[in-house]
Image (tube, rainbow, N blue to C red):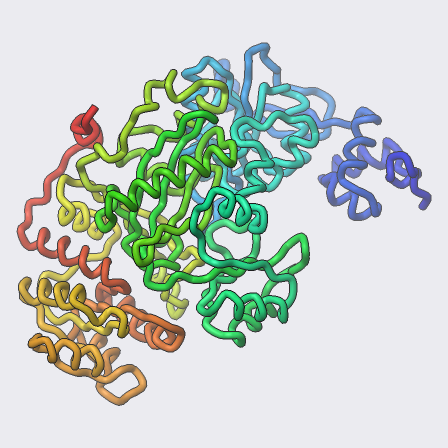
Length: 607
């Protein structure tokens, strides 16, 4: 079959063949693969031949009376039932199919974006293909297109609707992947440009930006082969965090402690090439992590809130319990978080939402990652502070300023109540899957506890997540050498004051006994019987505190963790989580947790 050089499409493709292929459901991309050309060429040929889809209407009132909330789907037929209005309109791309790491939090942002644009008098058009979301409720938007989030389908709808612009930054990674191609096809991307999004994703360019701004960051490198990865990791120094570029939910991320584990990771990595490198970062073990969600209008930056992760560094933000406001940070470091966020938002020319992830170790604040888009913490921050970040971002994207909206001077430090986010995990439903939390997201939901005191908020969050904290019994504790300090001693004494007795592995028991804390010694998993797992199975342990450090201790934790999950024993892996659990237990023992509405808490925030 000859190829037409001008269009780069096979010259024997007739209109009849192309129409039949489209009616059979072949996408432009599939046809391009079959015919050895490009998707762009097939699209161009199709439009030249006048082969375009029409949109049929699903009547949500079953023809009983006029439907004001119908939705549409595309097909290659004759009659088009979708009538384009003369109003100014904006298309919002949803998150597509639900998957772990890209869930309902993004749909929250899409829906709040719809509400905000309706307040601005703009017609809203949603494109999404997940029936389990609010954005695909047929009465949420002015128009809903139940279509896949592919370049072809989105362009077809844009050709028909002729929108003022498209919002890609509310639906997670799925719409972001086609943002650049949409822009190249003449679609106006509202908010942060695809160039700004790409700059934050491209490790080399982003690293150069951080150096230019003089913002600290962990050492990093980029690898394109197995040997190259090992060399980069050795130059950085172990442990390292390795991951593919352009991922969401921490997919395929691993912490490696030696060259063998890096080689093993690279063997499993898919499609490593100059276009798809593996990113290698210094892993800041035993650091504190923070998340900041903000909105920029291109000139001013609104800091919505600063969350402190209760879990250790290296655990995905979607899996870590978080607290607003942060409770273990100095005013100096808090100001650094704020300052770095503002500088990054301006440097990336962000218009809309931005999420920045930080780590703090030995008093130094490091930037780990910047996402100039919606993040999964936006709903939590918005509910905690009463500031609707997604709605503000949507209005900013269509030209409003933070000053116009009256939120320019909001100070997140004036929020006095405590809000705790706790993750919900499916481990009890999937026996024997690895339970140790890491950089790859595992949670399938989250809950929120809110109160005027920290203990109340912790207790409510744990109850909401189904993690009933014990109010008495024995605590098994095993801490790494760097955690054998005064902080640990203080936490252990707090548990003893609440009536708990302590049991520990040899090293931790010796440390506690040396400091006049009575503690029974038990075997580790491979040291003999009865060991700690036996004690958990026999109901002799009501709470597990195990802080691993290093690869071997993480391996030992799997057995302990699974025994705790199987027997419904609370399982804690960080000192900070152990300290917060004490507050929750203390509050539970007092009883009578207070209940107030979100609106009541928000009304108490200082103006």
